[in-house]
Image 1 (cartoon, rainbow, N blue to C red):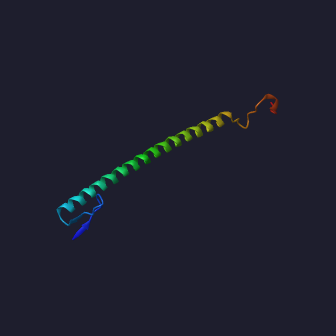
Image 2 (cartoon, rainbow, N blue to C red):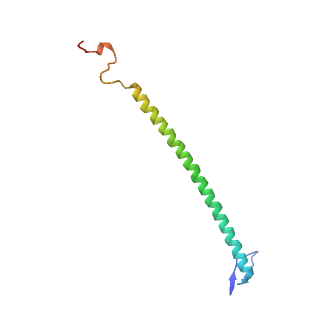
Length: 92
């Protein structure tokens, strides 16, 4: 059985199914596997960076929200408190 390989210098090379072709396919598979692994590592790295950025942004938003809530609590007056003595209608 003859198998066509990619053109090299405008010549079409053919190899019979045998040890040379098996070795070539094995190298091609290893190359593709290594490239796929590298691509996955890059994608995982990008996702980890994105996740880290999102986590930092989320923490920053939580801190800001906590600060706003604390500020509102500090600025809030209780219902029985008045802001000045002229607003006091106490009967004592």
